Structures are given as C-alpha cells and as structure tokens.
Amino acid sequence: MVSRIIPVDPFDLTIFGGTGDLARRKILPGLYRRFWAEQMPEDARIIGAARSEMSRKDFQDMVREALLEFVAGAKRDTDRIEAFLDHIHYVAIDAKGEGGWPDLKAMQRDGVVRAFYFSVAPGLFGDLAERLHAHGITDDDSRIVVEKPFGRDLASARTLNATLAEHFDEHQIYRIDHYLGKETVQNLMAVRFGNILFEPLWNAQYVDHIQITVAETVGVGGRGQYYDKSGAMRDMIQNHLMQLLCLIAMEPPHQFDPDAVRDEKLKVIRALDPVDPSDIVRGQYGAAKGTKSYLEDVEDSGSATESFIAMKVHVSNWRWKGTPFYLRTGKRLRGRASEIAIIFKKTPHSIFGEQEEQRGNALVIRLQPNEGMNLRVTIKEPGPGGMRLVEVPLDMSFADALGPEAADIPDAYERLIMDVIRGNQTLFMRGDEVEAAWAWTDPIIDGWEARGDRPKTYEPGSSGPEESAMLLHREGRRWREIRE
Ligand code: NAP
Image: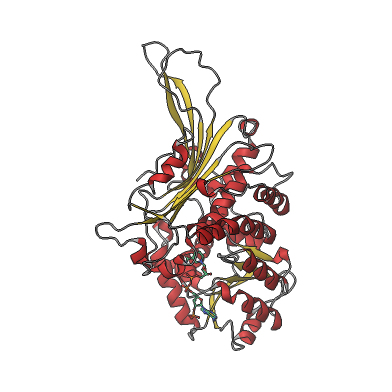
C-alpha cells in the first residue's frame, strides 16, 4: 500500500496541562507517532504549560520518560525520540494567574497555525480562554481544543459554550470526543455512504434493532472520586455512545464537510424520544476476590452513581420509527469490547423447509479490540446432507485486506490533533450538538434523583445486572456476548 501521509502546516501547539496524565499517556505519544510517520513539519513546536516551575530540559526529560512508557514496538526508537524532543518547549503558567503569559506570547510565531490544547480540569477552560485573549496570544485563526467533560448538564454546558464564545468563534473551538477519531468509526461512514449495498437496507423496514456496547474490565480505580460525580450516563452515554448512535442513525450529509455532517447528527439527537424509566437498567459492580466493590472504590457506601447502564432508545423519524437502539456500557465487565451491531430482520419466508433457527444478517463494527468489521451471512453448509443452512462471518481485518501498513492504525488522538492543525472540524462536536445531548440526558438523570433510584449490584466479570438481559429478552432479543 502506498503511504499517503501528507505533512501538515507548521504549527505552535501549546498543551495546557502538559505534565498531566492525558498529555503523558495520549497527547504527547500521539504527536510523537505523527513525527515518526514524518507528518510533522520540521519547525513544528510543542509547548508544554502547567503551574510547575521546571526548565525546558526538565520537561523534555519528562516527555522522554512518557514516550518510553507509552510508545510501543518499532516506534520506540531512542534516536527518533531524541530528535522529537528538539520540538519540545515549556512555559510555567497558572491558568488563574498572570505570570508566564508574556513568555508564552513571546514564543508564538507569525505565519504558523497556533493551537492551544486545554488538557486541564474543565473549571479552568474559561480562565485559559480569557487570558489567552487578554494577553493577545491568539488571533482569528487560532484554535482551542477542549477535553471532556463538556459540562455536567445543560445549564453548565450552556455557560461553558457562552464563556468560550466570548473569546473564540465556533470555527475555532474543537470539542474532543476521541471516539470520533477511531478508525472504525470513520469506516462506519465509509461503509454507509461509500457503498450502495447497505444504505437501501439501513432503515426500520430491514433493521430489527441496533446494539452499541462499550465494555470495560477495569473498575473506577484511582479515578473513583471523579467518576462518582458523573457515572456511566454522563461519562459515556451522553457523549461517546450518543456520537456513535448519531453516525448510525443520521441521514446522508450532502458532502463530507464539518457542518453538513454535524447538522445531520444534531437532527438525530433532536429526534430522540424521552426514555421510559422501565427501559433503563443501572448497575454498580460488587466485590470479588481481590477486587473492591464500586462503593468501596469510591469510598461512599451510600453512592447511587451507576458504573453500568443499559437502555433502550428510540429515534422518532421516518427512517427509524419502531427500531430500538440498545445502548450498554459499564466497568468491571467480562471483557474489554466495544462494538456496534446492526441486526437485520430475518427473511420473510424460508424456502428451505425445516432448519435450525437462523439469527439473520448482522453487520458488526468492532472499535476494540482489533478494529475491524464482520458481516454475518447465511450460506449452505458445505458437503452432502441436503440443503442445510449455516451462519458464517465474513470477517474483514484491515491488515488482511490492505496489507500490514493498514494494521498500523493511528490512535484517535493522533488523528484528531492533526485535524486541528488542518482546521478540519468534522470529527469534533459542535456547541449545539453538545447542548442537545444534555437536553435529552438531563430529564433522565433528574428522574433518578427525584425517585431516589438506586443501581442494582452486579457481579464483577459478568455482563451486568440480570435486568439488562431482560431488557432484550422481554422483546424476544438478546445481547451479543461480551467476549472475555
Ligand atoms: P491531571 O493528570 O490531573 O493533570 C492536570 C494538568 O493540569 C497537570 O499538568 C497540572 O499541572 C495542570 N494544572 C492544574 N492546575 C492548573 C492551573 N491552575 N494552571 C495551569 N495548569 C494547571 O489531569 P488529566 O487526567 O491529564 O486530565 C486533563 C483533562 O483531560 C481533564 O479535563 C480531564 O477530564 C480530561 N480527560 C482526561 C482523560 C485521561 O485519561 N486522563 C481522559 C479524557 C479526558 P500543575 O499541577 O503543574 O499545574
């Protein structure tokens, strides 16, 4: 396969929170991998910013350590890492103070893309936006990248949008949802809109239901205190699973351009029905040998926050009326698996007489592990014995189909940061999208609080509470298995 890496324009990228966990695990390794792939221009600069007083060399040492820890395989090349460190700079800045800003301003160059990644607590986003503007560090083309969570309800998301809008236009604001940067998620759009095969069947007439699962094996661990304030609904459904649902349910945009795509996603969110409480199952993992329960992890025996949620959602429009979307996500489950499954209806009549019951066609898009796709089809079982039907998967692994280079898929963060430099907002959430998602989520959470709803305890290593299975069983359906 021919490499199609196109270098991006020269840039100065400042990472506020450059010494933090996200920067060390994702942002800096992602930038390094783009450097390794020769996509980064020679004069690109990456400026770490945080309150800690440290020299440029101290920060370079920290970045080296992070890369050695978080970059794997052949890319973990010490010579290349040293060359990358030449691009790294540091400035000590307190988002809430005035020191350091003139230094940051002095470091900015004219004629290059200026981007500012807010990898700090959301409570500091407003301070950063205000001071960047007040110190004259940004211009009309500068970009800011904001991390999740974007608000914790509609009111706070509106306030945050309004604060950012005081200093930046919408075209300058890049709200990250790293799920949108995943290769398979973009492939979902390619499969839908680049083939004639699926789109005619992509509606309530032919699709029985859709399942979106994001399962984790880990518990909340050290993030317990933070997680307990949000829970699975705020942390996963309102953003990541909602974005996946939008990409499945949306109408074809007239072109693959940021506003055309985001307009269509917004229409989906607005078409979501309110969810009946009987269509939601919330859970908290219990204790097991060697692992603590959710309540022990968050050190609050009275916590009513969910570490698991399963729900049935309806999109009320012509295309989807009557086809349920089942969403499920949780921690300490039996496997680490994220997938979207489009389950098609069965054929209206079997011409083959008595057969073992077939489940029908399913298109499964795997986000992790090993990103890829799989189409379940019914064929004749080979060999003698008459016309016996059997279901087989047509499995597409990127590596098999496109060569080994294709297996080297860029991490979501790498792709998204390069999109910021390119000025392409297609894979970022627009302000009105985020607000619409909260407007749908808020009444659900308010309802739990008003009713004093408590999550059900589930066994760690299971597929969640029993009631989650019942949510589908009662309608003659079943969840796909979460593989270990
Ligand atoms: P973290 O490990 O706590 O790091 C916070 C960073 O912010 C540090 O570099 C810290 O350095 C800096 N900082 C704190 N107060 C500051 C101030 N007043 N002025 C300037 N810098 C300040 O947090 P994180 O896990 O990297 O998360 C960063 C953001 O990403 C958060 O919004 C989080 O919700 C989001 N996020 C994180 C993850 C993840 O996996 N970690 C995933 C998704 C989203 P100093 O103490 O030296 O100032």
